Image (cartoon, rainbow, N blue to C red; front, side):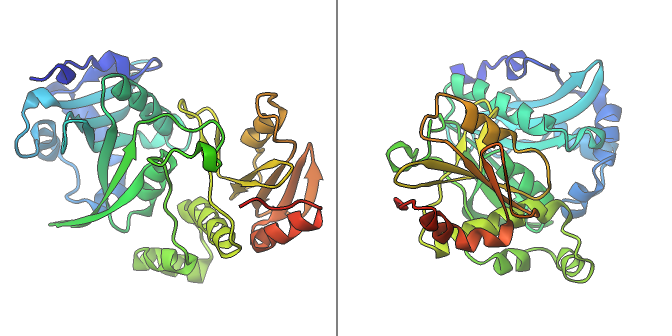
Length: 330
């Protein structure tokens, strides 16, 4: 067993108690899995005692149980998340996540992405450079979550008995201080469709019908808005830059740079407060930032150094900034 395999699971989280799961935990795991029917709709069969027992021992070819960690995250003795990962697979410097699942009652609170971010920090300190996983094609909820965590598609797809698995990968490296050309970390990037209509057409038929007929954006809303803005920026000739602090405490969707200012641009699918924008504007560390722009399902407005525009105005952003006597630096 390599030195890297001597991983102490307690280091993966400072907030939650972590236990390595075994046969005695099957009922707890099964209860958590039964609360996530969407996952198993794309990745059958439905969970049962036998499938959980199989998952506890499942290994890729060439790996041993010494490389496998099936762990549970506990909060006040309640199991809130499970993770199954393999050390040094498919390469020596790579972690492979076979499964990560939250208790459905804890979803949407930011706990899942925080767990992943903290795990990244530990894996990086142990010498691992990349984390890889796969989601079932068509499961946009999974895709949206993993992209939120910083993963991007590798372009590799593998067909199995359940469908097509899309391989995603994220490098565990430092994020840039400010995301312009001189500070770009080439190993960090996001991927967007250059036609949002193609993104929608990649959804399963049921989701497409729900979008067209019922106008129900649901879990896709944030991803669609962000992709739309990225498409608009590229078609204006603007570069795509983003920023994400290593501990995930600060993240901003886009930046544009004028001659006189660095302008953070946040895309919101709701009317929630723009905490990241406010932090970037008020923090003296970012002296080039004096105002920000919020795009979303909002009206035109201005407050606290933040300009708000409907998301469809993204196509006019370059022209708007020029009219404010700014010269775009691309």
